[in-house]
Image (cartoon, rainbow, N blue to C red; front, side):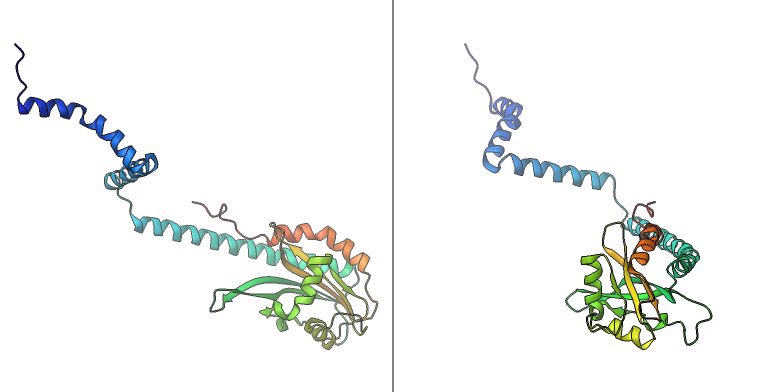
Length: 245
C-alpha cells in the first residue's frame, strides 16, 4: 500500500524544482530584458562589494594625467617659441614683406548661457630691419574678439585666404582689422589660414607691406603652401593620447 507523503516531504520535493518553476514565471511577468538587467546590476553590486573602488585614487590619477598633459603642452610651446620666429623670418624675406605675424585662435571663458567666447592673439611677429617708422604692433592684437574680424575669417574659410593689393581701394573689406592695419602704415597684405589636424582654422599668418602693390598674392600663397604643414605640426596641441598614464 502506498504511503502518504508527509508535509515535510512535500515541501522538500517542491524546493527541488521551485527555482526552475519560478524563472519562467519571472520571465513571463517582467520580460527577459528586465531580468537580464537586474542580473547585471546584481553582479556589479557584488563586484563592488568584493572589490571596493577608491574614488580618491581615481581623482588622483586624473589630476596626474592633467599635470602630464600640461607639462607636455609647455614643452611643445617652448619648441614653438624656438621654431616659429625663424619660419616667419623666412617668409618675410621670400615674399619681400615688411611685417609677418602669427595670430592664434583661442577660447576665453563662456557667457552666462555657456556659449564660449572666441578670440585670437598675435603670438609671434617679425619685421623688416632698417625700415623707418616700422615698429612691432603685435601687442595691439591680444585677446581680440573674432566677432570684430568675422568678414576676414569667413574669407579665409570660404576662399582659402584674403589678399588686398591696396588697402585704400574701396573694394576692400570694410573691417576693423584693415582699418587698424592702415593706421599702422600697412598698404598691402594678405591673411592666410593655419589649420588644425581636425581641419578647422586654428590661426592665421598675416603678411603685410608698407607699399601699395608691394606684395604678390601668387607668391605669398605659394610660400604659405610650403610652410602650412610646418605650422600645422608645430601648433598641434597635446592630445589625450599623449598624456595617458
